[in-house]
Image 1: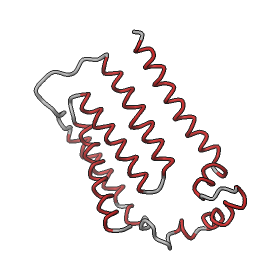
Image 2 (image 1 turned 90 degrees about the vertical axis):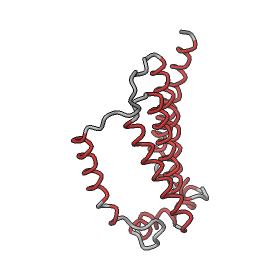
Image 3 (image 1 turned 180 degrees about the vertical axis):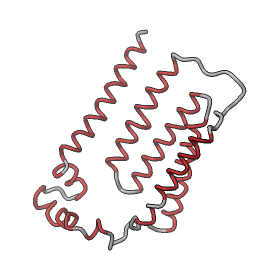
Length: 181
């Protein structure tokens, strides 16, 4: 990755962390839902930068789209909390436990290969070589990623599409009920 891409990636990760913390600690439900939608959209952009467009599309559709609509429809029927506090009080025990878990998980980051490293295990594996050599002759699809998603992982991709379709239908059903209530 170039310096500009790394800077963009770092800013995006900072935004995602900020949005996640805002969603967790905001007392106002509407504000928390908007922060959660921002978090989901940020994660979808992270997936795009990591060159996983299928996962990014699913996250954007289900996480930022459908879930946000369902949350907003839910709060239409609820009462917003009163009081002067904008943020929830922090419970230090669970916060310390979550911080410790994040710390343990971050220790594994150094063992990951650098993004774009031509000597990474993924780039040099037999599976990668097989896909690169055989994707076009076996599927006649020029883009290797598309060939893998559509041919080699077809059932997985079908499952992802079914989840997105089911979520979209659920939102349409809820919206239709909301129109006639």
